[in-house]
Length: 183
Image (cartoon, rainbow, N blue to C red; front, side, top):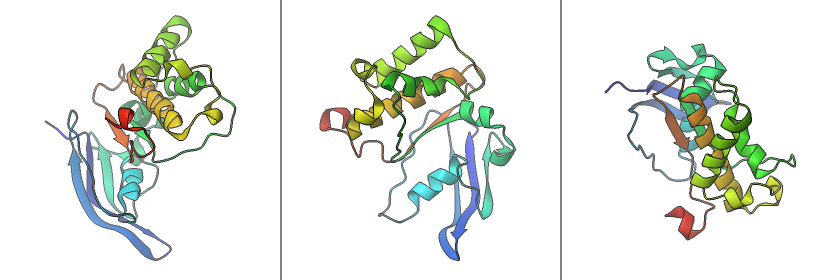
């Protein structure tokens, strides 16, 4: 199987401090890859490089053989979804509206019943359908994390028409969840 994401000799230096040096890996669709290490080892920085949030100061990252920087944002959004370690949202969006954000940007414009069905399915998968009408900032940290997980599921589903080979990147996805949802 051909790798979907490849990093070759990737490094990242910020303000004369080397955060990562000479990292190479190949990620295959359908596989779970786990990166382990102590706090401050550069795991989140590596993830940010692999998803295109940061540009490497050395080496290169490719998706299906194409340099990540050469991909239009909508195509990258269709190829991969990212659940960061933490994120804040100060706007008074409902949980439903946050999940619906996953519909945009992946090369598709869904409306009406199709959009509603995709959002509803993602809310169900993440076990947050009962929170759909709640304001996102009023949710607990674990509930917010599950709503964001529903958003990335919605994004992948929306992008699948353009990109059948996709990746889901999760940065410490269970850190704020209760035991039931961690399992």
